Amino acid sequence: DLFMALGRYNGSRGRDEYPNLVFGARKNWDYAPA
Image (cartoon, rainbow, N blue to C red; front, side, top):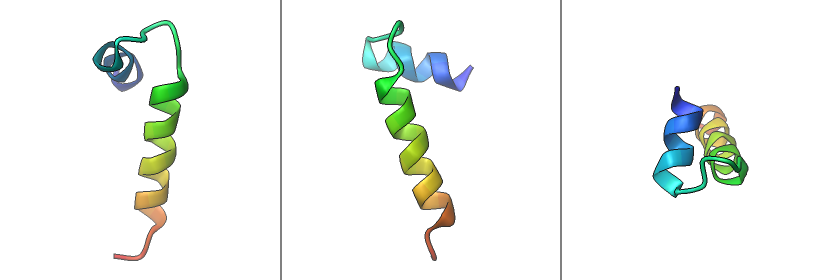
C-alpha cells in the first residue's frame, strides 16, 4: 500500500517517520485554500 511504498522509497521500511511526515504534509495541502 501507499504507506509501505513510501517506506521503501525512503529506504526505511521498518520506520514510519517519513510516511507520517508525508501524510501530515498531504493533510495540510488537502485543507489549504487553493
